[in-house]
Length: 224
Image: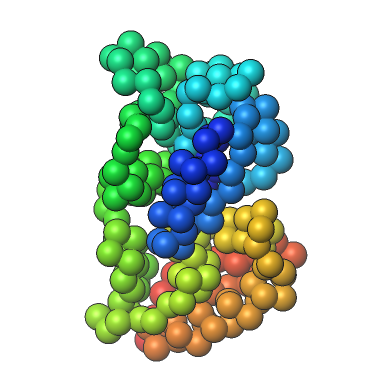
């Protein structure tokens, strides 16, 4: 999953980046509302964390503009403004959740996960497909009840495919979601990770199908 942090305090932004990176989320950071608006218009993100006290365009204005454009990704406000009025205003302009600083990182991570699940109409942290189970809260994977070893980028690709299954996920979307601005992912690298995942999923009779010229999808578990 890919998160955009809109925060003008570099220490806060770096703390969020480190915390979310530990659970294999790709985090990009901008310091102004204008940069955020441009980034969200041009690239794909799963969620944005927005400070209210931004220079020039404040967070409320940014969120209002994003919703007016029809952008539907989850928006989490993270701010030092702790009055009830601030919270109500933030939710009213289109934010999905509101947290105040100082914050506890485990709570922020839990809220991010919950918002992403809600955006995909999921009620559980466990993503299941046939005999495969990915527990996004505990960061564990099982195939036919046995532990499945998934290094960071393999986990991220499989999670992206599961969240969209049975729809196709484009190769460009995988590169953006997993690599971010500072990533070194290439189309060839994605193909390597997909090949490794196919080998690991084969015992569970699961297939990652290549849709030529578009991307990949998880097929329904094969019978037999």
